[in-house]
Image (cartoon, rainbow, N blue to C red; front, side):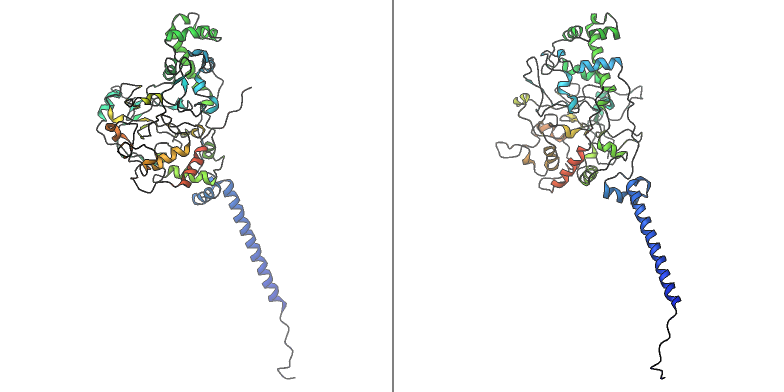
Length: 477
């Protein structure tokens, strides 16, 4: 046979078997790698805090889980003391008002985060419940952590601490510092901080409770003696005698003082005033996940170049593990538009200037604070339907639009005068308008500039603000 016609020699089976075995090994190895990767991904998704930071950030971006959970320190929960139980009854008793129709709970509704139960600019009160209040009631929640009113750094440890008035005088020429989300103040400025009410005129919950009792447009009692007489006739009068002795009603000032203290103890002890059970609290602890809109809103909230909300409404837990309060307890002049629906504003010469009057007069000469009002907590703010010290806005969309466009397009918010010019900051006299914040974002924009936030940004921030609403506590048997 010729070479060309010779049959080929069959190949050996060993190389083919070796090649097949190699492929099986590679497939098995690949399967193990894929299974391992999938297992790691599942573990990372379930426990983002237990993986490297870079991986945790990816998981947070994809799933809304908190890559760095913390343990929050909440107040202990215990049965109410006898004093607080008395305070609870006082809080809801309309008989303590001149009209017989208004209690603390009327304006500070437990079902509305202890804030107003409606969207009125201000609440109605007075002897016939037809008098317009001066300012919208703030929420009473979380006030147990509110510091006393002061100017500048705390001097409580100093035996020779200057008075608040002296601090204010010393700070009169200090340039306003810039507030940046997540950053330190840019100066050692002395600023008003702490206190209760919109102007900080009360330091304690007991002092605050006195306020509405004798206010002619609220509970409208004419004297402490009148309040004491009502307490003596109340169904819970025996509790006063059990707690304070049988002669307690012989001293009107003392019995009213004890009543106001009881109300303050109710606010301090009852968990409904400080539950810390919002979705955001659960997210901080790794027990909840934010939606993509909520996560974007949180980041915009904390972004010093965008919303910069966290510059005043601090969003991170303290080093001591206390949950964030979403306020720095300080005061700002924001220049919100005048609310011409308020009865007091029918007088063109009347101006509510917050820290420097008219409802406190100890700072009337400290004009650098005129127009400043307390920065409230944003916890449960999405449950409210009235905003700012004069109730001029009723939705978060309106509030956010004001923050975003106040300087870039002021004609949206302020009226025009007879000369056609926009009357910017129309609820602050011209000589005090220099106090208005124009340095902190988003107020650092100029007329005609591009606003700091888009409409989509605003909706994401509002979505985040809703995560600050506390869940209702279970009903007690």
